[in-house]
Amino acid sequence: MPMRMPTSDLHIRDFSEEDWPQVWPIVQSIVLAQDTFTYDPAMTAEAGHGIWIAPPGRTVVAVAGTQILGSAKMGPNRAGPGAHVATASFMVAAGARGRGVGTALLVDALAWAREQGYAGMQFNAVAASNGAAIRLYERHGFAIVGTVPGAFAHPSLGRVGLHIMYCGLT
Image (cartoon, rainbow, N blue to C red; front, side):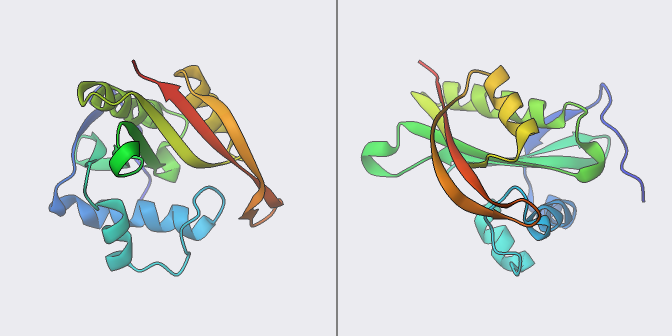
């Protein structure tokens, strides 16, 4: 079935368990592609749920009408003395990419992190080959603060770097 494209009715809301049957195929397809996330491609729906919906923090969905077009999870990057810095991850359905869904999820995550009092947001593993995501993050105040060379085994490009990106929120 073709993906309905985002329209003015696109909104972000908190995840509910009834959303998982639409979220899992998005997560699964991105994990199986092995070109942006470091998750094991053999991940099951149960393991995926445990990773994507795991507390602490918040999981949201981007919805147009009744169709989920993407999802994000966010929370503290580390526990204890590192808990004042947030992190987030984003997944957008293939048919909805390039139409503002990722931007809406990122803006929502940044607003949430500010409301929660986080000092900044850090992304730990942005594949250097994921140019669209890097450009989006940079447009919203993130900078590459380090790169681990060859840390990501891209299926067609071979080993590429994994960027650590940071945006101060205070």
